[in-house]
Image (tube, rainbow, N blue to C red; front, side, top):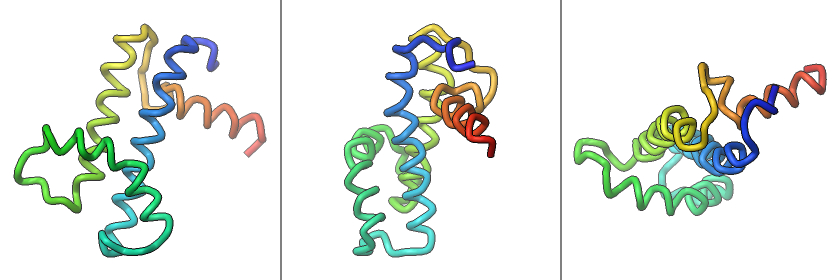
Length: 114
């Protein structure tokens, strides 16, 4: 099933997908922790997503507070992955599970028999 997506589409989608999911996890962590917490996973996610947050800050509306920035970034990355990348690369996305990263994970899950 993964062969319907061109290899360049997978290579382009993987970084965007990883950034989207790490932004979402970052948002979930700062719901229960302080933003400036010294927790190692939170510091790793903050450092990994800092470049995308800097770019998103340029287009972010003023009413979005800093605690919502990771969720807003994940939403923007989702829109890019769902609408822009399929048009640019040339593959079809009909649902969330049709995106290359998620399809790869779901096929690995079925191969493992989970």
